[in-house]
Every structure is written in C-alpha cells, then in structure tokens.
Amino acid sequence: EKTPVTLLGLGAMGAALARTWLAAGHPLTVWNRTPSRAAALATEGADVAGTAAEAVAANTLIVLCLLDDTSVADVLAGIDLTDRDLVNLTTSTPAQARARAEWARERGARYLDGGIMAVPPMIGVPEAGGYVFYSGSRELFERNQETLSVPAGTTYVGEDAGFAALHDVALLSAMYGMFAGAAHAFALIRKEDIDPAALAPLLADWLVAVAPAVHQTAGQLRSGDYAKGVVSNLAMQVAGIPTFLSTAEQQGVSPELLSPYFELMRRRLAEGSGEEDLTGVIDLLVN
Ligand code: NDP
Image (cartoon, rainbow, N blue to C red; front, top):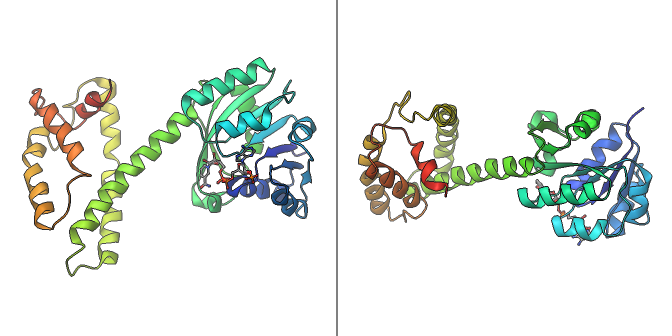
C-alpha cells in the first residue's frame, strides 16, 4: 500500500512533484488556488479537493509547495491541522522555518521542512542528481522517507527545522560565488579572439578540480589550525592580487566581483596570518 499524499500548490515545482507520486502509484489529493492547474492533474489520476481544508482532511501526509512563507500562512489559515504530518517544501529562511515548526506544533501537527536542490525538470529523474534537504521531525522523516524519496533524493540534516533552509541557502550562496568568478573569467576574454565555447570546458574542468579544496577548509575550521596542509599560503596569494587587478584593467574589465574577496584576503594578511590558507577570511565574515 502506497502512502496517500495531499499536495497543496501546483506551480512549476508542485506539478512536477505531483506527477512523480501519481506515476509511482501513490493516491494523491491536490489543491491549488487557481483551480485550472489542479484540473490538469485530475486527468492524470489526482483527486482534486474543492478547498485547502478538504485536501488537508483527506490524508495524514500534507506536502506544501507554495510560493513563499506568506502563502503558506494564507493557505493554512483556520484549517484544522491536528495529527497531520506537514512537509513544507516552500522556500523560506531558517527563522521562518523554525517559526512555522512552532506554529505547526501549537496546532497539533508534526513538522518537517524541506529545501529543494533541484529545478522541476530534475524531479523524478534520479540521474539528474537533484535532492531535497529535510530538517525537523526525524520521526516524521523516517516514517515517510520512502514516499519522500519518490520525487528526488533525500538528505536529512537535523532536528532543527531551520537547518534545511540553511543548507539550501549555503549551497546556493556558494553557487553564486562560482557564477561570479565565471562571469569575471568570461569578461576577461570578451574582447579577444577567444571563443567562449572554447573557454567553457576549461572553466568547468578547473572549477571541478579546485572544488575539493572545501574539504581542506572544513578540516582547518574543525582543528582551528588554518596553516594545516597549506599549499598556497595567504602571503603568496595576496602578492598575486596585482596580477589579477592589472589584467582586469588591461582587458577593460571591472574588478568589482573579485575586489571584495581580495580586500578580505589583505585584511587577514594584515593581521599577521601570511602562512595560513584562505580559511581566515571566514572569521572576518562572521560578526
Ligand atoms: P510557481 O510560481 O510556479 O508556483 C507558485 C505556487 O504558489 C502556485 O501554486 C501558486 O498558486 C501558489 N501561491 C502563490 N501565492 C499564493 C497565495 N497567496 N495563496 C495560495 N497559493 C499561492 O513556483 P514554483 O512551483 O516554481 O515554486 C514553489 C516553491 O518551490 C517555491 O518556494 C520555490 O522557491 C521552490 N523551488 C522552486 C524551484 C524551481 O526551480 N521552480 C527550485 C527549488 C525550489 P496559483 O497557481 O494560484 O498562482
């Protein structure tokens, strides 16, 4: 017997989730503010509830995939949540997730928050490598893990309901740093007779080659020894900064994406940490 699922929210992501549960044979009850989106799923086997309250009453497992935390408050306002398993896949901040967990507890519901590390085309496609961070009730997670694994992989990161959102934002923040670096790299060659399509594979391979440096960073953070295993020390790297800035200037490229990081490297060096790795920059960021 497949666990029946109620899903509130049939936007791009919600509809993708819905189709995987239907395909896997889970009875599915759906509701969406704009009814036409639910009607499309009815033809694929979903039960369409007339109201959000009816959808919540239909099953124990309630998955939310709405725009933001405000829409969750709007949709669930006044609905009896007693003894429900709420799984909230709506993107939120850690503080919103923690407040929502407390809010659910006060209403007699169990709560699991989720942060989706995938775009809709990756849902239901295990090879695509998408997954969902979960945090909050471990009991809820473990009891429903099979059902939650249908749309994408699952990574449980702790009882603190805010941790899924925190992991989600941490990974996406690192992604933006990577995109910023790649934008600068493409800008450097923009006016030259270099095909961006020739640079792209070099760039992709290089980013993959240097990415494992995060393991060394983690080891240094845990031990507190930021010079442990250092290959390219901070003094040497700061000495190289003029090369980056001069090259950018020569190519007519603004240094604005790189400069903030260089500034932190220089500040850390000024504190006398020349023999260390770049890890000390992290301490400068944390207030
Ligand atoms: P969409 O904009 O496609 O859908 C938004 C959904 O929220 C719709 O079902 C919409 O209903 C509903 N909604 C919005 N406001 C309200 C409200 N006030 N009351 C009731 N329902 C409301 O977004 P997605 O499906 O793409 O995203 C859903 C969640 O998934 C978001 O939190 C997003 O951050 C997250 N996510 C999305 C990813 C993506 O690539 N799409 C990737 C990772 C996470 P209606 O149809 O009536 O407008």
